[in-house]
Length: 304
View 1 (tube, rainbow, N blue to C red):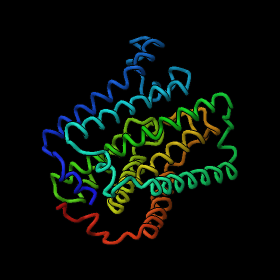
View 2: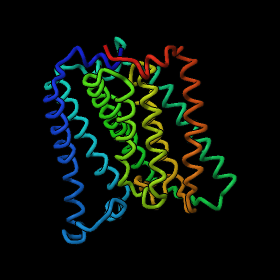
View 3: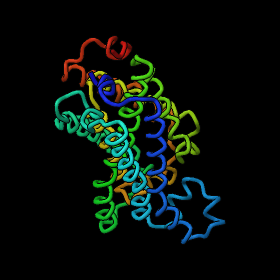
């Protein structure tokens, strides 16, 4: 059982407190190059007044900015790995899955599913509403983006998954001895982590429903599948394809993507499309493919 993996390792409360502090410190260390680059570009006074969108555009080189931004997650994942290994004496395998090895087929399946959905959805919107897009493609810039994105975006998404669906979910499960509380808390904390994203400024706080629902979906497939492989694949595929395929002036990923969205976004469509179409269909597909049973026990049962 996935959450129960944490019962087999050193799981004292103080270890989790120290662990979160160490992970936070590593994340801040990873942001230092980005901060230095911004200070060097515009000076301390201007830099101190920048919001997140300003930080993502001030260097005037989206590929360099993306690299600096993603570097934070590299350090964060390294810190998390060290905490798990040396503070909790836990293997990364048991943080990832209840299986004897990481199921790469599951990871790839989830990655391909969300990548295809995102690509098809973007293509349909482009052909139905071509006035909402401009072609943003520049070969030399895109090649650089491609290599940065392929290498570092899976690290960024893995850091978030290991933090929320892994470390936090297992830790909360140990102390509450149930599964519903970790599912709810990790979903809401994941959602509100995005509160400072520039999308919130453009779309309003209502878009937080989308982020919380995404966290809930990722938590459900982790608990039902007794491992993080599906969540890891989904998150990586979603962020990677979006970064390569389409950007907008109000998104956190300011990239040299193929397309640029220039219309006013429809927040209701963005939210309902995921809630009523993508997530239900994927839940049904995964449940049939992997023969999920005992939903009540796996989502609301006790941790023993």
